[in-house]
Structures are given as structure tokens and as C-alpha cells.
Length: 169
Image (cartoon, rainbow, N blue to C red; front, side, top):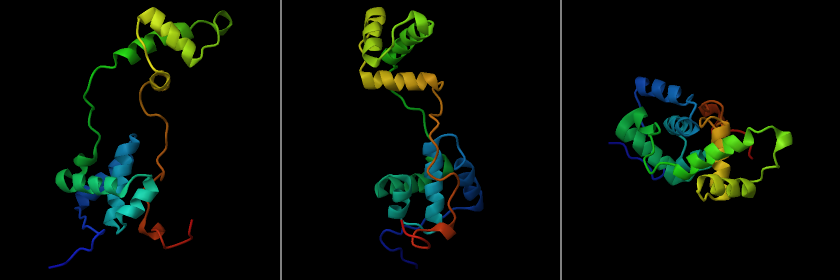
């Protein structure tokens, strides 16, 4: 019976699972794509630490992704809808901001986050922090979808670019 060394847990997949991982690695959602790529790298012999450095996460995150894959396959790596309270403040802020920011530029003051906060408080009777307002404005500006952040690796790295096999950085 084979042994596995600490730091090198055995990750196995079927050809069907590998195809699913490769498809998920092309997901528009960066989190899903990164998890799929990390599992593929695991299949190619990369350690949790090596993968963590590539994706800017902790080795424990990589281990958790491997565990999700081992338990539920490719579907275990997919993002799920987050549950929680409705974004009442953010929705009110977006509505007010949309109305005041659509007025022609010559007819309005320069809007700063503090000015928008005050206007939102006056019009919607809602208090929202600058950081939350900033996130809300960014989300509404992109239609609430992809933030336009590219994955650190545009594709799944191949074993030929494994750490230690080429130039050092």
C-alpha cells in the first residue's frame, strides 16, 4: 500500500473530472477558475505551498479546495450563492447616486464620497460608510458582474513551468 508524504496529499481525478476542471478553469468567476486551476496543479504534483504562492492564498486554502474536490468533485469548487440580509443600504445608495450622478456635469457639484454620503442620508435616510459606498458604486458601474480582474494565470499552468524547473523569481 502506497504512502503519502506530509504536504503531498494524493489528489486523483477521472478523465471526465479533468475535463470539468479545465472547463471550470475558464470560468468568468475568478474564484472558481483559480480553485479549478489549483486542483489541476495538485494533480500535476504541485504542493499546497507552491500553489498558494501562485494564487496569493494560504496553503490551508489550497488544502480546503482539494478537500472540496475530493468530497464533491468539480461541483464542490463552484461558487454558491451567498445568503444573508438584503443590501438595503447599498440599494438605497445606488438609487440616490444614480439619480444625482445622471444630472449633466455643468449643473452639479463635483461628487466626492462624503458629499454622496450626505446626499444619500438626506434623500434616503440611510447612513452608509465610505468604503461600502465605494464598493456599491464600483459594483453598479460594472453592472454587478465581473469586476474585470484577470486571473493570475490566463490559463492552467503546465507541469513544464513547475516551481524550481526554470528561472528563479
